Image (cartoon, rainbow, N blue to C red; front, side):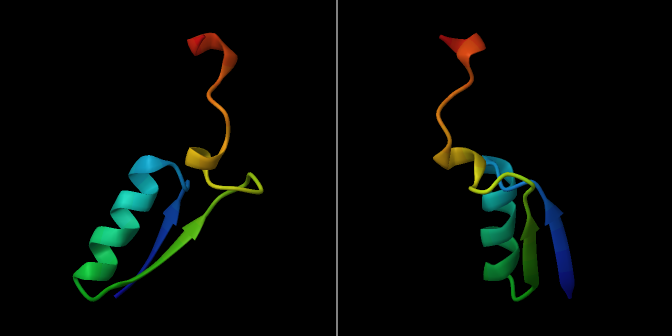
Length: 46
């Protein structure tokens, strides 16, 4: 099955890995130039 995942944050990446491990084709869509886990944390958390 081909599945599209919107958002490459930690949950999107984990979902894609789980689905790929079960034999599905997972494609991530992210509007930012890099996955969310690669960006610095938001300033509201500091």
